[in-house]
Length: 110
Image (tube, rainbow, N blue to C red; front, top):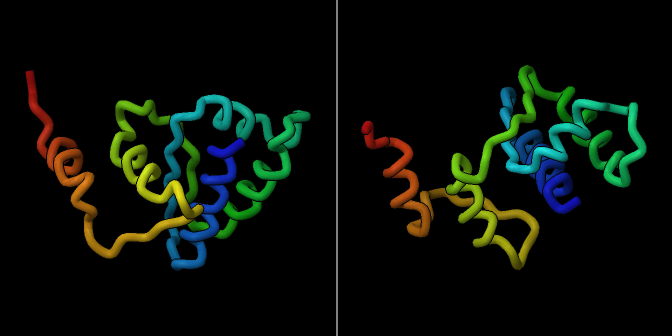
């Protein structure tokens, strides 16, 4: 439920900021599955999925994709930073993710 709400709120925020192309990654496989089912379901998060679908129509390109937590470490750390409020925005890279950004931009090849 919280992952669906977070995705919906993030999509709304991106729309308000004028984003035209939005890939949304989540580590919640259930949300991806329920979203793919569309209105052919009785999930208790159906109203939130309906909101996500309606919001997605406002973008030139939109995708909701699964990304395992191991590929989503930056988002996971940042989500913990805004646990007291529902939405956060940074204008510079927070120092708590400097090392993760460096690792992702400079992968080590075996």
